[in-house]
Image (cartoon, rainbow, N blue to C red; front, top):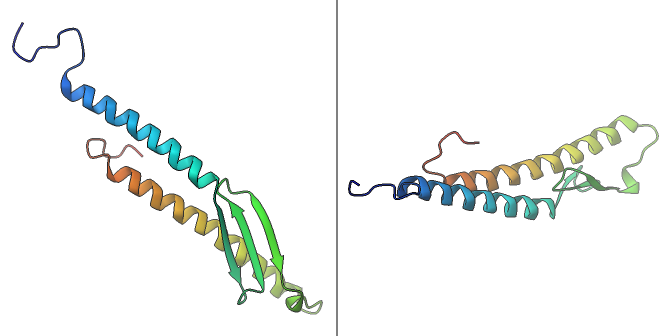
Length: 114
């Protein structure tokens, strides 16, 4: 058999790629669990409305300052609620994106995998 042969297994480079892929999968699962256990919040209207979402994108709470409730201006309250909810979702998405970029940074040999 030629030097550096297979000897019944994978060549070293493929073995390293398999190990790297397994580690990446473990890192991804850990990151996913960490993100899912977190909460993300965002306030609108100077703190008048606060929305909190989980890492699984479920709404946990919406808090509205009674001072901002004006029966004559329901549209403003609706806008504040939308801004708070969308901001909290964006915070969760941004954090997920950062974590994915960090994880992908170690890929090296797997461009375009995600």
